Image 1 (cartoon, rainbow, N blue to C red):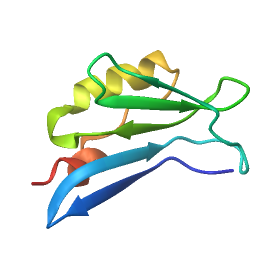
Image 2 (image 1 turned 90 degrees about the horizontal axis):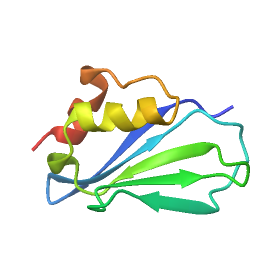
Image 3 (image 1 turned 90 degrees about the vertical axis):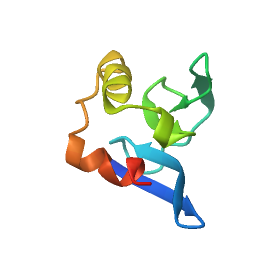
Image 4 (image 1 turned 120 degrees about the vertical axis):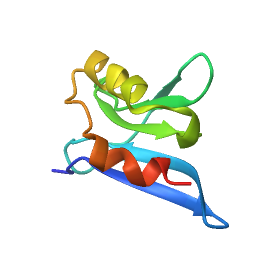
Length: 90
């Protein structure tokens, strides 16, 4: 089982992207992605339609409440503010 975790990518000391890995069975592969209208959030889905993760293409532009709204829509537990802070660091 893969546990939920946030992976943050930095470029020249600044946050440039983040990926929220959602809990899922080990070995599940992404086969379909769905992007938000503005392209800031991209959800990866497994063959069974289970969400595997969320790519946050510009973390500085995505407030926690917007991410949590998407998580609730996906049937996931909202992310705590302290867990999202690394993605929002300048």
